[in-house]
Amino acid sequence: MKALRAGWPGLRPVALAAAAGAVAALGQEPLGWWPAALAGFAALIRLVLRAPRGAGWLALFGGAGHFAVALNWIVEPFMVEPETYGWMAPFALVGLAFGLALFWAGVAVLARRFVPGALGLVAALTLAEMLRGHVLTGFPWALPGHVWFHTPVLQGAALFGGYGLTLLTLLAAAGLASPRWPGALMAAAQVAAGWGWGLIALSQPDPAAPGVTLRLVQPNAEQRLKWDPDLAATHFDRLLRLSAPQGAVPDLVVWPETALPYLLDRHPEIAGMIAAAAGGAPVALGLQRVAGEQAWNSLTVIAPDGTEIARYDKAHLVPFGEYIPAGDLAYRLFGLRAFASQAGASYTAGPGPQIMDLGGKLGEILPLICYEAVFPQDIRAAASRPGWLLQVTNDAWFGTLTGPFQHAALARLRAVEFGLPLARAANTGVTAVYDARGRQVAALPFGTEGALDVALPGALSATPYARFGEIPVLLLLAGLLGLAIWRRRHSLA
Image 1 (tube, one colour):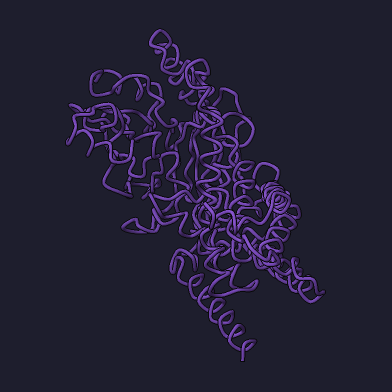
Image 2 (cartoon, rainbow, N blue to C red):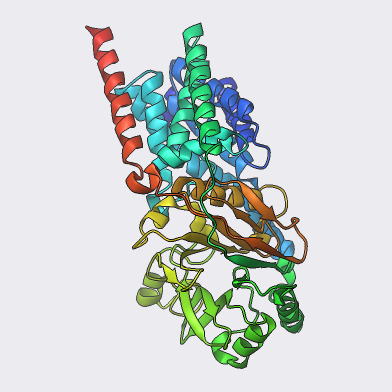
């Protein structure tokens, strides 16, 4: 404790760091105030660099301020049944904010010790964000590079991905943090270069469309009523009604995640009802399936004759939401069924990313269930490059202010990174289709019941990011760290 107190920078610097992080979070969706984000990150970087002590504390509270504002939607799941779980909401927000901020604090301490200076800190923070996207299954949400969704700079993700945009953002912020005018000039040049590249990319001809028409169904089932057994028939009838063709029969009807209120294996007659409602179109639907003591969050495709032609089980589950880490081990060792997927108390993970070949014009797709669209590494892990991406999700858990819009923006980012169109069917929104450059082609109004008939855009050739992943960013970071070390040694000589 004495060592901790000795490193404490003081209440005022800590409060300023938290405020800077909170301002930086205003660049996240749905606001997208990227100038505020750059100013907030610049202020935080300046505080950390100039502090005589306590760099780790400042980064910790700066990160906590950032994540508390950006991820405020984390309280919403506890408000579905507030009388039971509402008391947990503040603990979840504070715990998540400070837990994620530990990545920033740790690298700030290391950078201060081994590569002091702006370049070292920027490289370290970018590495921290890359670690945050992978450690303990990863949570790459609210990256600094996610502030560019409302600008052409987003197109840079096709070159370097979201982590490359994070590096650009922090480098620009570090330039603004410099007390000398060349720093601000360099920051402006970086943003201008990213902007110009984006404009050039957006001006290129669109790829040929495959001639596929999708019907995306948005049932708008309220989360607290979604699993009410007395309303199951009502919800199912609504899905059938929204699936009926309005004119030409679409090539594929898509229902959102866990849309089906029944277990298909226990009610085989349902598949025929779904096929008949779609009027001759195959239907991709989110459902739960159970076998013995195990359950899966799945996507099934039903052919026009009512047979199942493809199935995908969600592989990247949400920790503490869809499974309890080490829950299976606790079941085997101590018999604690409440946390075990084998006992049906949580989902079992599928084998991994899986290409679905639906044949004909639909071709090969990569299905993503909800949270899986957050992880670019999962898309790169697929056995081959698909023709398009399909995300089904239920964002009703996350309110109506920030969470659903951030989630949809991350799906857009995947489209840009990989040069693939993405169709997204959500329970209450955002239900939309994005082209291979991340532009919204069509969408349903948020929080309404409806169906969207839309033509699927074409795919681009594999982008540099699709081919090389994080390798270019890692090389840039290695160069920055090498330059920072050289400058330190040069200044000590």
